[in-house]
Image (cartoon, rainbow, N blue to C red):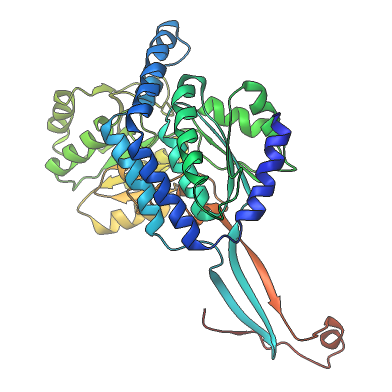
Length: 417
């Protein structure tokens, strides 16, 4: 089947799933979770094939080591993947929620109601667990998807989606072609042109991927290019807390987009030397004169800069950051509030690691990605970010002419949801 036929089928499926009852969607999710758990060995075997092939790609320079690390599925990732699906099944249905009820006039009532976006085009590199995350979020939010993973994870992606779709076929009333997968570069080109059938593109990958997609499609794009995250150690910061938070943010998963890349230290922080020594003992390489303050290392490397005060820290972040996630370590509540209010990022934290920027950790069940957009959805995008809204107006033969003539007037009274 060529791409246009796949897109047409996905569009049809999106209209069929749009009003699917919540109990059928939840049943489908639990079936999927059980199927993945029962097929772990098959998935691990496919992932092992991909890892073996990816080692050659690393050696040839086609992919970097951080991409290779994201490709690997282990028991912990598998556990989180399965639990994430089950957690989504427990969440409230995000579709057909009343967001506003307003009586325009007697007998004329306006409803603002959440609804699915439609068809999502997902383009991602490595990260085979993306398949289950996106699929489960799409099911719960009543969207159809077309997935395009990187060649380095082809076997794992094909295996996981095959298991998911086999499980869905056993759920009475669940539409066909909700979850679709394509594999070639030609399919990516077709996807980016397919604004007739695809409503939103979500890229999950590096800056070059996101930039290419944004420059080559008319379809709205949701996502982030870089993860240039910062931690500012204020003058009053506790040394032990600062060390613990920074080490976690840099070493817990260095290749993650929410890993800290730049450390800003107040010039009057008296424990600076002790802090830097502790970071080096944690095997973090410190860069005091980086080539760029906007570089995403994806490794245990950290740019370090001394700043005069919280205002200079905020200015640096807003100048060189990517709008992802930033944190301040301080005992000064006033500085913390200033930092969180004035830093222009999707996530602004106080005395905590940037690694918390994650849909699973936010209780979203899973995420389709992290958005640095300023419209529609921002930060970790879960179910709510995969819905939009429509207006439903219910009347009783009402016509505009009566209001234009002055015979009737609006009273615009908000009613309980």
